[in-house]
Image (cartoon, rainbow, N blue to C red):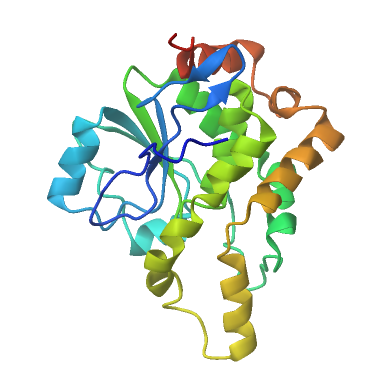
Length: 250
């Protein structure tokens, strides 16, 4: 399981859910620190926050949000001269929840939708991470839970981290949701049913991610097999594995 004494969350004033994916038991070792980080939206980062992210070793930022989200909350690193920035939206086309597009009201269905119907964005993100230069890669969405959670699951699966640990890592977002809730609920209608539905979507319970991994295993064979099926080469998978996993220190 996850060591309770490991501080993996970055202490930032303008973001609440930026976490390091290092230190997890993996196949043939453990995941390296300061290589892959997951996070929530970075548009509120202060100048000190931005410098801290740089000093932590991050050199590449991948923004998984929809184009509409970028228009209202632009990424602070999008025009940076010393940080590679990529916008790779997981959801393409009309943003679910607006106009005629609707998003299911349970997370299990949402995550299966990502896996089955957002493969271009998932593939492009994984390939971009593999091709990134030396330095940490920070990928994020709005809350750092759903789109970011699926990418994290794929990366940890490549590393050979167990489904139980992947699901537990996903559930760590619960600690940050209380701080993020006021921002995420700003545009929610006053209707009590709609508010309750939004709150239900803001949960981060381990079984939702564990069940998604079981779904991938059943439908596609395994996480690496799924990635191969959507167009990620075996060389790319191995490159991420070698970069992300190190032998355990004795």
